[in-house]
Length: 62
Image (cartoon, rainbow, N blue to C red; front, top):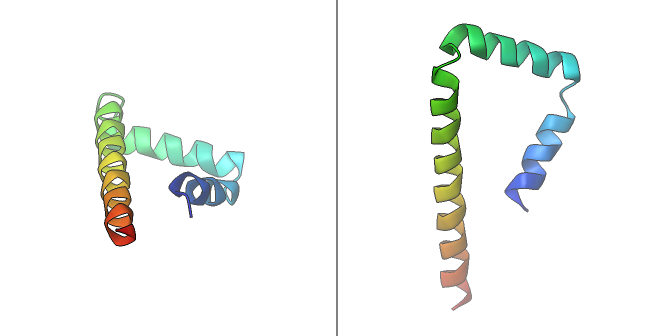
């Protein structure tokens, strides 16, 4: 199952109000300057996870 599809399903369970509340809480907790760093780290982690899972799948096929 694709990671993007799973993420889309999880976001589908949240309404607009819940997403706005989560964003406001994140801004209050971390501040505007820290959010881009957190997202960059999250993106890097997801990229590494995807690369590792692709490598594992290719080694299983061989």
